Length: 420
Ligand code: UD1
Image (cartoon, rainbow, N blue to C red; front, side, top):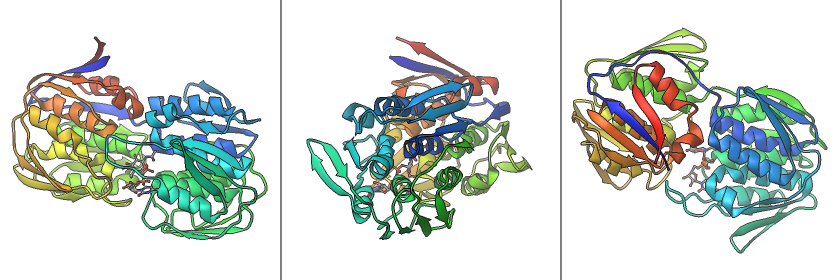
C-alpha cells in the first residue's frame, strides 16, 4: 500500500512557482468523445493521473488505440470491439458512465455497469438515463448493468431536473450524433462542459449556446477528428491557493485561468489572503498572518465547488472564530472531518453542515484517505500539523493530482511517498 509522509510544522511558509496541470474533469469526457468518430482525436496538456489511465483502459477494451507522447494523447476508435463498461472499471471511476451517451449514439448499443456505492454519498445516474430515454433509447437495468439500445435516436427538448455535470456531458455527446434538434435546458455551466462542447464543435458538431444553461444541438450524421487543448485544472489550482493561504506563503501559479477560480479567489480574499493576477494565466497568492473565518455553501458553477469543500475546511481550522461549511451537492461528503479531528481540529458535523471552530494547533497523526478531495485536505493539514503525518491509502490522491509531492516539495514542503 502506498502512503504519504509529511513532516509538517506550524510555521511552514510555502514559497515558489508551480505549473497547474490539465483538468482531470475536462480530459475524461474529451476521451469519451473520441468514441463518436472513427478519426483521430488529439488532446494536448493531458494530466498524467490515474483516472486518465483508468479511462484509457476502458477505451482500449472498447476498441480504441492510443498513444501518449509527453502530454499529448492521440486516440482513435476505428472499430468497436465491445460495448461494455465493466463493474470493475466503473467502480474504480464513476466517470466511466461518460461512455454511455457516445456508445449509444454511434453504435446504437451500450452496456454500462451501475456505479454503486461511493465514498461521497449516493450518486445516482437517473438524469443521464431519463435524458437518453427521451432521445428514444430503450434502457433496462439487469444484473447491476444498464443495457441501452437505440435504433433511431431523435432530437427533442430535455430539461434536467437538477444540474448534473456528467449528465449534461453524456447528453451533449449523444445529441451531437442524434437526428434533428435537441434542446438541453438547465445544463451545467462548469468550464469542463464548455471545453467538451468546444472539442465537439471542432469535430463538426453543431452546438449553439456554449457556456449557457440552454444548449441547442443540431445532430449531424458523422463527426471527424480534431485537436484540442485541455483547460487547466481549477480544483488543483484552488488546492494550491489554499496551501498558500494556509502557510502564509507566497506562491505563483502558472498555466491556470484565474477567471475560472473567481469564487474560490473571492472567499480566500475575504479570509485575508492577497491574490493578484500576474497575467491572464498566472496569479500570485500571499497568505495572511491572520486568517478570518468564512462561511461557505457549495453549489454548481459558478458557485463554490464541492470539490474544494474539504480543502477550505482545513483553512478554516486556522481561522480565529467559527465557520459554517454547507455541502449542498453531495450527501455524506464529510469523510475528511473524522481524520482532521485526529490531527486536533475542532469540527462538528450536523446534517449538511460542518461547523469549524478555530484556531486549533494541529499535530501530526496517522490518517486514512477516503476520497480524492478528502485526501488533498489531509495533505494540506499535514503541512501545518506539527510533526509527522502519515496518509494511508493514497490511491485516491493519485486519481486526480499530478506529481503533488514534487510540486509541494518545490515550494518547500517535506513530503514523500513510500510503500509498506
Ligand atoms: C462531476 C465531477 C466531480 C464533481 C461533481 C460536482 C467529473 C468527472 N466529476 O461529477 O468532480 O464533484 O461534478 O461538481 O466531472 N445527480 C442525480 N442524478 C444524476 C446525476 C447526478 O441525482 O443522474 C446528483 C448527484 O448525486 C449530485 C448532483 O446531482 O448530488 C451533482 O452531480 P453531477 O454534477 O452529476 O456530478 P458528476 O458529473 O458525477
